[in-house]
Length: 89
Image (tube, rainbow, N blue to C red; front, side):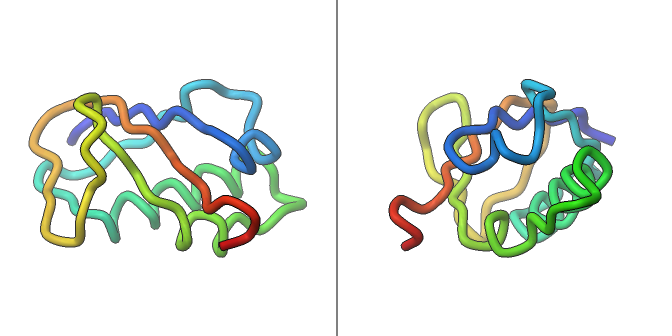
């Protein structure tokens, strides 16, 4: 299992006062697993809000400022940056 830290920006701050947001993922996890784990964690932190749409529409970047794509896989513990859409886009 990988310990992944997600740094929240923009609308993500409405869901969490925890910074960074910690999630655990299996080695080789992709964007889908990251989104699912982050959605669950945000629901734990704020059960009164539904983060699904925000998580699904957001991009995620790694420490090198590279945006993660569908084919990317996480192989080591890391810090990612949650980049929500701007102006609802």
